[in-house]
Length: 162
Image (cartoon, rainbow, N blue to C red; front, side):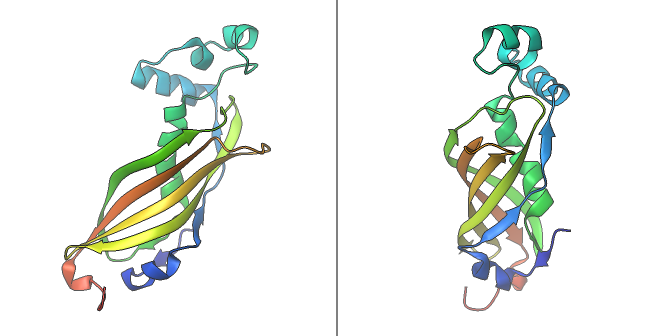
């Protein structure tokens, strides 16, 4: 169950693991759906027989951008909800690195370390996370990135002194 915290508690989470998501299985149906949505139908993603015969991966692999996009699901699954938040905004990513391919039917999960929080204006806090997507049973992660989000809240809820 995802916990809820108050705005006043957010600075105390900086420097800690803010969340560890549940495992997500990346199956061929998910890969095919992403290929359809993005028009990226490269055989290493959507043709299991050809990928097994011709690719160095022994079968199909997830698109790197599919793996990156699953951070949204992982976020909702494990990061604490800010009680006063009225809107969450994706601000962007820095230093995205695709380290290892995610082979079909593998399980992945996200690690989120809150590295920075900065109150902006009267009703926003910018949160920066170091994120890692781990592949079950593998030494190297699927990806690493720095992710910045903005939580909007009613200015009357802003903690004193921040």
